[in-house]
Image (cartoon, rainbow, N blue to C red; front, top):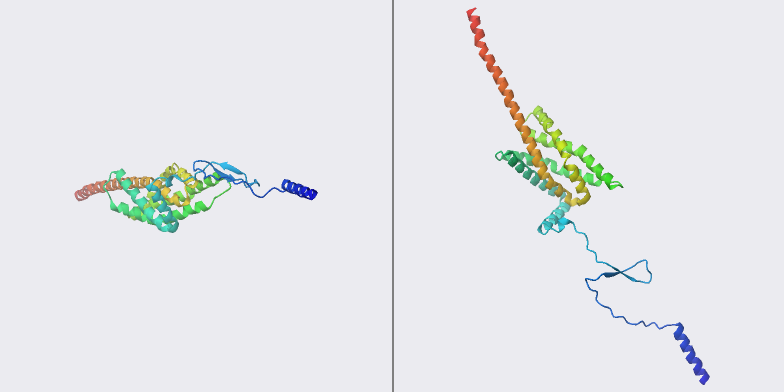
Length: 277
């Protein structure tokens, strides 16, 4: 009997040595402090070892951290996504209106509502095509190299869009003023080459910055803010061409009037000579 009890006790000892109990010691869990780093589980580690990582804050665009302006940008972005054409149409009207007011103020002339009306009509015809063009640029010419893509977009925009838009702007300004076709062509020759050269000093940088750092729904409003100054320059350039054309008309009419007066002064002398003969 004693031998049997001894064998049973030895088997129990051997079992405990080779088969540990499933009960694990309880650990006290503490609520993590928000200022401390949060642990993360390494997916490559099979034993579930916690690896501490620092807290990270998501990068927020600067225009979303400007208080009331942030809400305005967000409202514009929502409107742009829901009603892109209506948003572009209204935005273009505001841009052209402000640009014309600024140009008239720079010229020092009295306010002419007809000039503002012409600017708004030109805006109505260009807002949607301009928006579609920049959407086309955004969806095309995307290569593996970001530098190549950006350079291509800027080059295509300067070669294709800028000459067409500037010709439309100055041609419509002259047409809505009541000029004839030769006078419209003369206005285009006076203004378009100069405007294209000066646009190369501004719009390549604006286009490159827009496609690099600005989200698609905010590109139009970013370009619109720049376009207020650009429309001011175009209106100023158009007004200068108008004044030059008016001065040439006055000079031409003066020359023709002087020549006609000179001919009229000669006619009585010739008649007198004929009578005396």
